[in-house]
Length: 314
Image 1 (cartoon, rainbow, N blue to C red):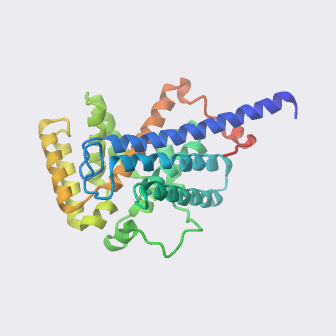
Image 2 (image 1 turned 30 degrees about the vertical axis):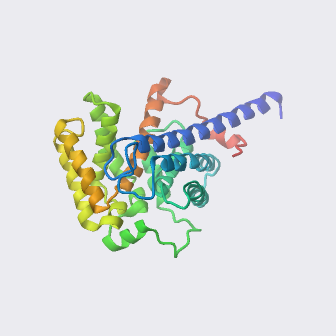
Image 3 (image 1 turned 60 degrees about the vertical axis):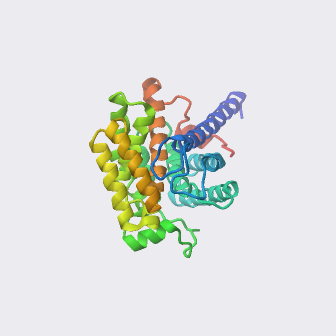
């Protein structure tokens, strides 16, 4: 290989590695931002543990950091593999490895299984289509990939979320992914950005985005812990808070505090909404990065041709 070809390939390899690293760190940062957001009704935050007796802020942060490698691996897989079936199988392997790292970091507590699924798919989508980081593009890719069966998934493995899907007839994590996580584009992102445009602080904007998700998501975390009555409570009260202007208003702040007490009393935690808030913050960060680059494209991101030519090593 001529020297110029060798160095060009090496530069492409470095750029691809850099993209995987950036996407993994952005996903982890989104997880950490969700954990830090305070006060979240029924969820772990800087103030308390919400409705969770077995979790803490420190534990959630440790879990977030443990997932960075898995996100990196998902990005590398999406840059290497063009065949959708083989890529789906590889993403399944990385997802299960990430769950094992999570369990090791948390002493066996499921802190982020839903986020491993949602963010793992989104990281892969962003790596597969470098620079095409509009929410619609990313989530359309996610929908296509989620529709493919994982060939290695144990048929007898049943999670709490899957039990709720069967019992209550809701979409669940996979079903929502197959729909392209429509709650993100129809509710969370619009509310997040409207709140910012209206002058709200970033904390208030993110809390309003969380409430927007809680208002529309059939959250299997809530259903598995508090049933239909708990889900109705979450959706109705979140809707009411947004209707009076969100948590940035005096009335909204008071109702948020009341919702916190109601969720603790019902042992209900909107964990599915928290997972989608992390996904929302990840997409928002990528859209911002793409928009801020000249021509709307992140020049650090390699093209598909460059990735194919590069020997990307995890």
